[in-house]
Length: 252
Image (tube, rainbow, N blue to C red; front, side, top):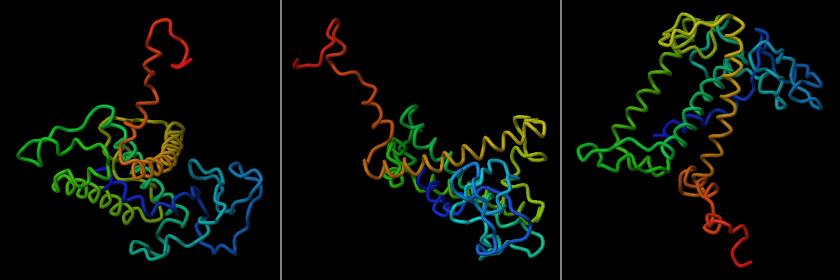
């Protein structure tokens, strides 16, 4: 289940350029690089990073934000009525970051709080007991995987609809949930200042989750077990430490 979500992260490399450019897209060679940005005090970044988007600290040493990503092989692109190249990258960054956050929870939650119960009629009683996500992909019922794929497809469909409808006025990351005018079951009501701060918090969590889930994937693939099983021994006291009055290691 978690692996199905994680595979959607493969194309996220280009999404790490978080900034807003002017409405015109330019080639890398045509952009000026600004020296001494907040993220790179001793480096430089393209002038497309002007700090307009939440979380933009001028980190783009390779120059992703200057490339014409919005129009490249993009069936949604409409000349004159579409996001800028950097806005398109931010859209991807938010999508991948949200998936990464779900994946991180999926890696940690089963080991801490347990898994769903299974049944003899639906994959067996141990269908969901596997904690290693790479092994779990082959133990859960196929119908459970189809549910995940269908859910992901629905959210992506909602995003595509809004991209087409909003055009150049796209509310980045809007999938109709929680954003102003969208489905708001928790009745969230932020002031413009509070909403801007929440956007900064979200993008920070997205970036941290993308880095974190990459580490979790590598560790799970290398160890063959879940992260909680690996961390548990680090918090277990050795036998001698539990003996009253015994403060020296065994053998001394």
